Length: 526
Image (tube, rainbow, N blue to C red; front, side):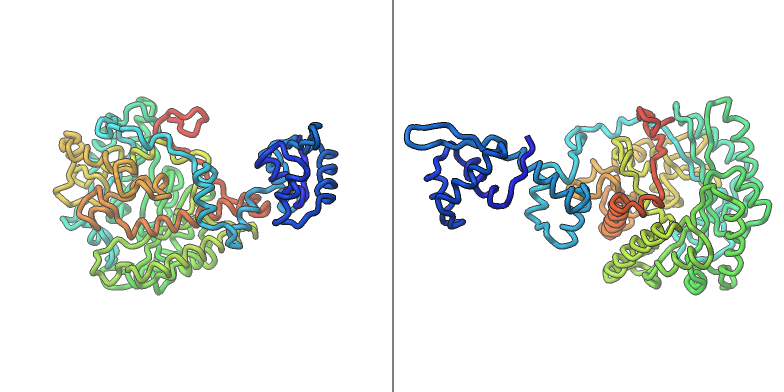
């Protein structure tokens, strides 16, 4: 039964819910100190509540005995529904947003909502004892270092100008062909296989890239596989032929540009010290225009010298016309002048908030842009497979050097301690592979109480190694940045659900994950 109660009626009903039956004299005495009501007032209110069906009475010896005729929970639900309808148009999200913005929610309120299961869904797998090392050894992706050389000389480059602290070299077709065969042989029943042409600068070995794609296309049907290629390039070597080929063969293209001319040319210089901006921007614009609606990303790097990185993103969007954007924190030694510091964090947090709010403004205006780190799929992810596999480096994802050596990912290339094997003999350092299987959210004690752990999935093993000396460690600086990005991404998701204008123009992200192949809605299709 739905009953609408006034504030005064709530006070009387609360007395009856606390204890019943009660007489008129008992109720009057109970309410006297709080309300000052007389006996006649109580009688009037009881009559009104009986008429509403909220109260009933039984005849007693000398006095009537009153009982509640509705449950407190039912009355509260009806009241809440009425309030939401009148004030917030029926939207619980709008009400919660208003309360948070007005600081109406205390920490005690938040703790109470959490305890009631209203804020966080329980993790049904958290207490399971996973035998991580016995997971399958299926490989789904390779990063082919087709060129350990580069036609730029970026001072912050973790790869030491493409040589990865070793010798320069170009991958032969025979080595690349064997790498693709290795991927097929170790991919199990997976259909979609990812291959990234990387370096150095892969376009310095463009002919081999073309040969390898042609070879992959020739064997796809035979093995029931679908190769998805990505080209990652600094852009110097882009030609009309490259553009046509990329737009025909590459599932994605990653284009390296740090943003404003003065920012880009501070570090992205050639061997003579000349900036690259004027040479690469027209090439990038031509490629993206020809690419149409196919996937691409402008990928920038921000350092201690440009923590105002939103200016670079907005430059790429507003001045250059790029809408698919990414900006990564630099990977640098702590003593490097480019390295980000603790003092930079408040500025970075402000930048991420500024970006999120500006993206909402653009959405409302019908001119949305995409920022890689704000892509958040609340409907499908993160699944259990993702939680236990982490980023997949060293297990389902590996980097291949020009000479066919296997490493967990591009950030480990050149370190002899992290060589897994080679494409001819396969993974021979199985103990190392097993260690990388432990790089996930459930195997890291420091992740246990982090609210963002399931989207992080344990973080980057290479960053953990550089920060702590252990691939199973926790790179706390990176954690702080990641949590801020998640906070902003979630804010945008909420805003898009509350504002019809935002919802209309929002960029939709739904997972096409092909990780486990067990989804029943097509989201995990092999």
